[in-house]
Length: 385
Image 1 (tube, one colour):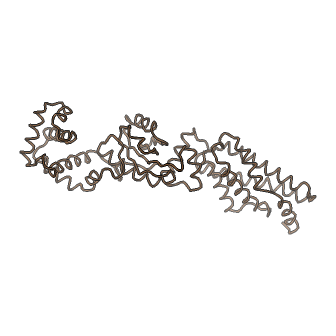
Image 2: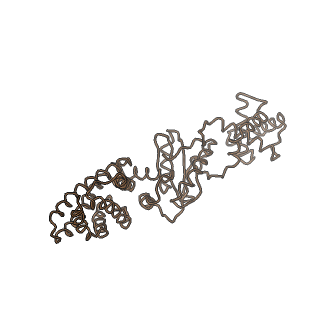
Image 3: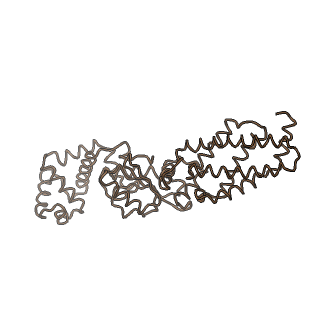
């Protein structure tokens, strides 16, 4: 482009008020159902950034650079992240282009520079083609071209929030999509892998009390955010992280995974907070100690007799050393249980009235429980996907 045409083009574009065009376009696009969850001020800012980038190419009569195309792809990915499917995005692009062209036409009309205006009009639509192609590519790369429903989109965004993969500028739209109070506090939770027979029931119970939830059928895990104390009615091994604002959910989620691993390994059918079970964690961390204590407590017996003794001692300790309550759990007469306990003390020299001996028995029982339930590297928990 020669200098004369560049100057003429510059004069035509000088009167283009991009801030006004962006505001008018955002107001129009805001009427589309898919865009109603977006903050209008944020939408104006995002549109303005795209328009300014496109204008730089238009002013010089050239195709967008690689960096500019990357900015357009990022815009498309952001719309996908905000839950806007591809078809509404294309409709919004059409409406925005119309607003931009109307403004350009109004600025060029009274100028009298018809040749420059004609060339600029042609380049405007070529630029729109470049921008739309990059925006669509970014949207598709984000993997949400056609979300099946809002729940699917919420689950995907929640997974990225829990794993710390959401850029800060996308947090406001994530909060709106998930219905979270940015100023509130939530605990991250994790359950699973869940047995297939229990999966639907546990997921339903968690969904009834959670603020936001995602289920991963492939791994059998369920994860999400809940208000502190909201999951207390759930009767399943669920791990809870510390309470944090939703923007810091990724700081709470690792604790939820650790706690879920412990709850699952030890069969605790209730929500467990991270750090709540330091002795259980120690049992897992010291398997050699557990093995020695198993030999100390149960090395004198084996087979069915050993299994009966393990069940009896476990019930007795779970019932706070109340023989009558433990006998009811075991469906035996209290005197039968008392006989087993006396025989245990006689054969091992351990006195269940002494705290240190009781602790040895408890540790041995937990070790047996842990080795009976295979677990993954972090206790069987998975990432939020």
